[in-house]
Image (cartoon, rainbow, N blue to C red; front, side, top):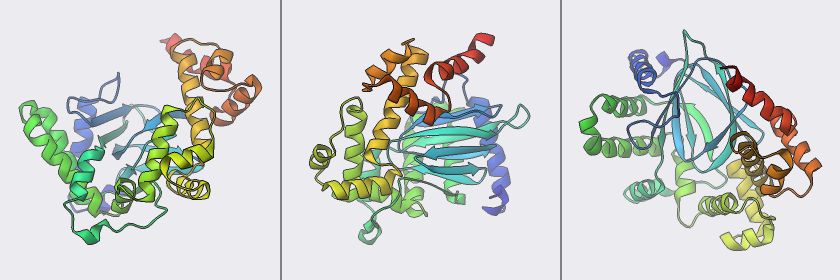
Length: 306
């Protein structure tokens, strides 16, 4: 998908988005001066990095990226919009980036309360959503979504306008997402009595209790579903079973504990719920490609070289 496919002036829009992202992206994290607006800039390709995806949309203004959720690879670049409708553990790789042409990306958090309030004001027929809608996808970015995103970015140059204007533009972005090809995904997760919302509650429980032994029958009872229905709808939305989802959360946290807090392999595995060190090492290697100690050593090597 090229930028020129979206609209006659989309090349100029993307050029300005890229310029603003490059100017305001920080090296110490994606947060910006506007709450819920995230900016990233990378000048080289990367290996697999854990990303804790929360409800949000992401627009690429330079380079290419791949997000892996379960066994699904989602490739996206300039002209594409990645929508994440609920909390998902994932891994990401920067595929295309250089000093001359960096990977540039802008993201906007989706506030569930504001989303639900906006859905309540839409025509009733717009609320009908199919079941089994996956919670993450890539589609071409519409000209209207590009325009609203650019106007939100421009507020970085006018900090005095942020408090009054940012919430209005955020609401417009939510509307553009709801009225676009990915709207069914957001509605499926947001509907209070729908299966998507029950999956979202299961996700929230797993995130809070990932180190505990998972008993599917108790989780199903907690969210008001049968075991078979939970398994079916959870897999449909997240591309993972509840057990796989829990496993990724455990391994991501273990990696953080070793890399950031200095725990050894055995202590990190035990802290996230593994009773068997060999099982922990085997599953860790399957996800990250290296045994735990070697993976952490490889991650620390670039830092030590600086």
